[in-house]
Image (cartoon, rainbow, N blue to C red; front, side, top):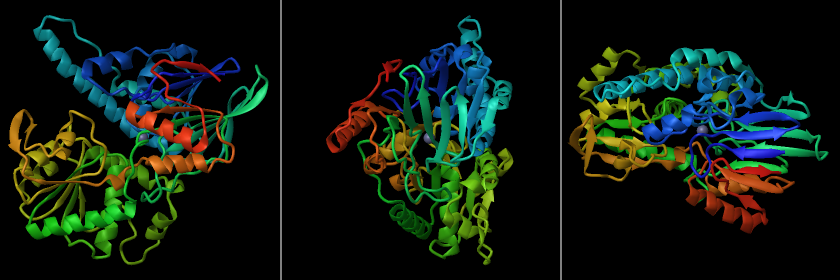
Length: 468
Ligand SMILES: [Zn+2]
């Protein structure tokens, strides 16, 4: 059996791993590589393997860095099934179409510049139509159901507790060449206990080969409940000061999680009554998908839905307004009372959040609340660094806002949670590969795994191949 790491190798984006066994080729994830524009375009466009040669693909979850290059994979000749949970399929329907739209817009912008320089236009990585076409290849597989996906290869998806529909991929393989039985486990992105709406990540009783994420392999997060308490306090203080709470948040997952927490706080009277706006069309579409997948809910979520005090809708309550149209969004510019605005993008790179930041960042009563990882060189990162002056739409603004970071809302296991997950395996893996982490966190986690469990660990490089 051979494993080749075609993405998320010593970085967090572009998850793509190829398994070759029993004469078949199985692709785990087909994510977008996200970096500098020209480099990313090139790397995403030219898949590092022949798409025709892939027999089947397994998708761990819907985030773009795991699913975002699927339309290009299909467009380039892949003809097999894409197996994921039904929730992941439905989320991809919204997200890949949205991504196709972004790809088309991006290329229109690039081509305008190219035309001025007399250069020929370039094609988008994929279009909305390509994204729509790729959805036909999806096949839903429920959690804990085993299914043969290639000769001698049985797939089981376990709840990864990272986002709605997210899965740990377990492949039980009868390796005909050896011959032997071998279990390969791919953690996907591993969540953490206490995230609202969804269940906690499942443990796996054993693995022979482990491919594991390492996003926060060198850091610890505060418990979710602690940061929910901080959220409560920050909102109370901002309300008292008469200011706005502006939250850049990913439309998928984080926004629904925040809405759920705010609803709980409001229904208990722990935060003052104030208008809350979710200003993102994608977030609205995705919330609808959340409503249709009760098989993914945890016990608390089911409890909320049984409430009889008028608070039984986790994603809707009287103080909450979803704004879809541009007109409704623009109306928020005239808000004068304290309010909470949740909007995308999550790293404040583009989208409606920029308008809200522009309107309120110079007001010292404003709080900007960051709940996700912010990549270097993004506006979100500059805000976290509390840079005194920031550029928005090409203009300079004084950053007078209070900026707060709540890492407890992270969807990723921290170092101790990752180690605890491996600790729970009765049969420890003979080979472990760490992916989906910057080198610092991946190597740090590798050291921890070696010290604690005496495991041989590799941190593969891009395109590196291993016979296992
Ligand atoms: Zn993810």
